[in-house]
Amino acid sequence: MTASHTSARVEQLIAEMTLAEKVGSLLVARVVTAEGGELWEGRDDQSPVGFGATTELIRERFITHLTLMNPAPVADLARWGSRVRALAAGTRLGIPVSLAADPVHGRDRNAQVAMSGGGFTTLPEPIGLAATHDPDLVRETARMIGAELRAAGLHIALHPMADLATEPRWARIAGTFGESPELAAEMARAYVAGLQESGVAATVKHFPGGGPQRGGHDAHFAEGAHTVYPGGRFEDHLAPFAAAIRAGAVRVMPGYAAPLGLDYDAVGFAFEKRLITDVLRTRLGFDGVVITDFNIVHGMSLPRLGVQLPVRAWGLLDLDPVDRVARLFDAGVDQLGGEDDPSTVLEAVERGLVSEERIDESVRRVLAEKERLGLFDDPAARAAAPEDIPERIATREHLALARRAQAASIVALQGEPVRIEPGTRVYAEGMDPQILARRATVVDDPADADLAILRLVAAYEPGEGMMGQAFHGGSLEYPAAEIVRITQVVRQVPTVIDVMLERPAVLTPFTELPVVMTGTFGVDDDALLDAITGHVDATGRLPFDLPRSMAAVIASREDVPFDTADPLFSFGFGLRWSRIGANAS
Image (cartoon, rainbow, N blue to C red; front, side, top):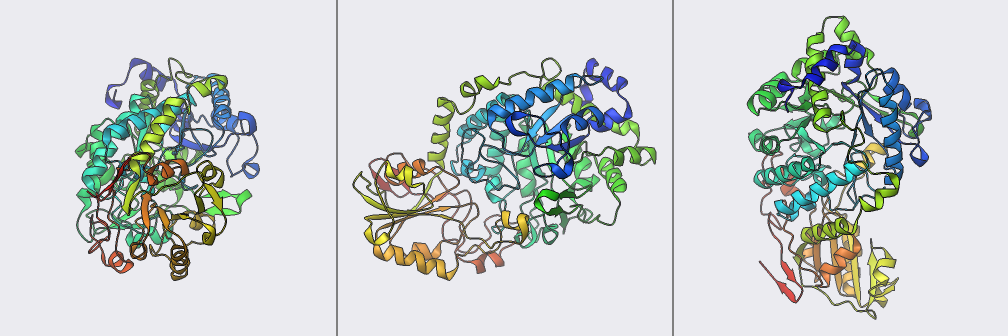
C-alpha cells in the first residue's frame, strides 16, 4: 500500500485528527525504558541519557513514533511495549505507537549508532554479512532479525545502511555492506526483503550515500559536514538505495552531510528538494516515509552525561528551527527524527511556511505504514509475552543460524589452520579465557605457551569527548610500538592474529611475520576457534580492499570504489580453509 492509495480508515482518521495530533505523528521521539520494563516518567534532566516522560510524549504531545535508546533485556522490553500500547489505546483516537530501534543484534557495535546486549541473537556486523557474499543467507538472517524485533514489540528497524565503504577512514564502515556497488546493492536488496517478510519496516540510510565523507570524517561532527565526489561517482553510491527501493523498502533516512561537487545546494541531504523529491521520489519511485536523521532541527542536551550534541543542519546552521522545518517539508521529508517538541512545526504552519495539506500528505504516509504493519487491527500483533520470550528470541534455531552466518563471514588471510588440544598451552589477548579453557590450557605469558591467539581491533585514532571516542576514525596503521609488541610475541611462540575489520586496516606489517591471520567482523570466540582449528570451513571473502599503506589511502578519492593503489588484499580475497586443510583460491 502506498500513500497515494490509502484506505478509507486512514482517510477517516486524518479527517478526525486535530492539527496538534497530526504534527505529533510526524515527530519521532527518543525514549528509554526504566528498570523492569516500567515506563520512564522522570524529567528530562533525570533521565539516564536525557529523554522525557513517556506518558507526556504520547498523551500530551500526541507522539505515535518512539525510538528506543537503551538495550533493555528482551523480557523487560516486552513488558515496556505492553505499557506503551496501553497508553496509546487510552488516547482520544487510540492511534497505536510504532516502536523503532537502531541495530540490536551485533556484537561489537558502536554505542552511538547501535546497541548490543539485551538477549537478542548475536550476529556479525553488516559488513560481516557482506563478507559471506551470500544474499540468500543474508535474507534468511534478516528475516530472523525481523522476527525477533517483532517478538520484542518493535516495528521499525533503523537499518540497513546502504552506504558504500569507498573512504577507508570513515568510522561507520562496519554498518555497511562494503565497497562494491554491485555487492552492496545485492545485500541491501536481500536484507530489506528479509526484514519486511517478518513484518518489520526497514529504514534504508543514509540517502543518497554517506560513504564519500571528505577526509573520512564522520557527518556527526562539523569536520565531516560534507561528502565529496572527486571521481564523479555519485551514481555508484545511489545504486544500493535504488536496489533497496526495488525490493520494497518502506522507509528512507537521508544523511546529515552536505554534498560538495554536485549540482545541488551544499546543504544537508534532507533539506535538498532536488534530492528528496526529484531523485528519491520521482526518479526512484519511492512513496514511503522519509525520516530525517536525528538532531537536524534542534541539538540535544544530555545533562546526566555532561554532553551537548550540536544541531547537524550542515549548510543551514544560520536558519532558525522553524525555517529548517519549513525547508525539510518543502524538500519532501515526512518525519523529524529525534524531535519531541511539536511547537516548532506548529509555528511553521501558523506562519504559513508549511500548509496543513502538506502535513496531511506526510500523515497519510505514516498512518498507511501503521496499517501495513497491522497495528490498527492488533497493536500487539506478533509481540511475545515476557514469559514466551525464550521461545521467540535467541532460540536454538536462531543461534544455529547466527553461528552459520558468523562462520561464513570469517576471512582467512594467511597461513593454515592450527591444532589445539586440551593440553595445548595457549596465550590469548582479546579472548574470553573461560571460553578458551574449554579447549586448551590457558597461560598468562607467551613464553610459556605453545600457541598465541591475538584478537585485535582495526587501528584507529581516539577522538575527543564521548562522541569522538565512540567513532573510530583516523589512521588505519597500527602504532609502531604496537607492531613491535606483537612482533615480540610472534618471536616467542607460533601466533594467530585475528583482526576485527570494522575498517580496512593496514595489515602490511603482519603479513611480513610468520603468523596465521584472519579478518573478522564481529564473531564470537567459539566461532573463531572453530575456524582457525579447521572444525568448520572458513569461506568468507573480503567486502573491501585492504590498503597496503596510509599513503595509498590518503591518495585515493573518497567516492571511487577500489581506488587505493596496489592493495595488500583485494576485494573478494579469502583463502579456503576446510576441515581437512587449507587451500588458496
